[in-house]
Length: 341
Ligand SMILES: *Cc1c(COP(=O)(O)O)cnc(C)c1O
Image 1 (cartoon, rainbow, N blue to C red):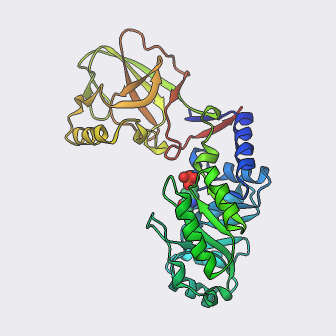
Image 2: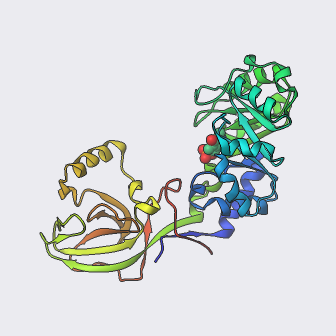
Image 3: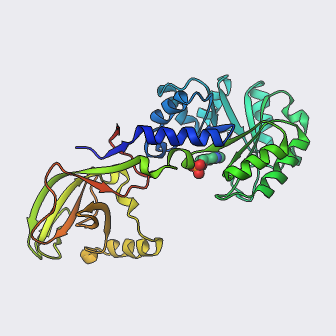
């Protein structure tokens, strides 16, 4: 029995279309676990929205978005490196736009794959990838099909920084500007200020921006009455009180267990406790599974496909087959099944 993601299709698609209207040049990002929906589903949705460009994280994700029926241009966001064979293989694909973030890589691509479609990433205050525009001259870009400059800002990027970096880049060559992580209003201001074609790559705000549009649920697979002190689970820990072991779908394979919504500090404390084998952490290790209106403690660390949670008292409050809510972090949780309603 599955861990299920239920999507309210109307609500979700209304939100997607709304953001699309607010953000001219929006490029959806479909990467990783597909923000909980899966890459194929996001690709299908992008095609349905009538968009011609989609971004993925790495070259290995391209096949999944093609399988989802997206036939347009795909931007690979992670910059090309000479040792990345999968990314190199895509340089010949006329529907792939490769990000390049070092001057030497740009020269290598130009030498081996003249006419490859490339975006050049500028170094921002993120200091992750990127080069300074003054490392390049227009000549470095001449052989390639230059698709523009990328400016990837920190989580709440500043308009001032975006403007400064984009202007420096445009001084080298006028071309489209692709930004990430600006607010909608800052993006629109930037677009007006620069006077070139712009795009904003958006994942989270697009796919996960309407929280009422999706819920994750687990299924109750089994119920066992236990007495206080009775041993249970792989680790044969003791039940903290009289109560119930409720076995629910969703475990480490789904990424649910790691998503326990507690502050970093207490997570660290708990990590230490579990490592010491002191599993009287029971009752404190909050699971993401809610039974009877509140989150319950893990009875022991989650298994691959299911978890054992503890409900104290005479009544478990659920029956086998019931669905219970899961507080899922969508970028780490992958459901077995997506149900569109
Ligand atoms: C992942 C990524 C995005 C999308 O990020 P969200 O926060 O999910 O919108 C945009 N740009 C780049 C370069 C990325 O790697």
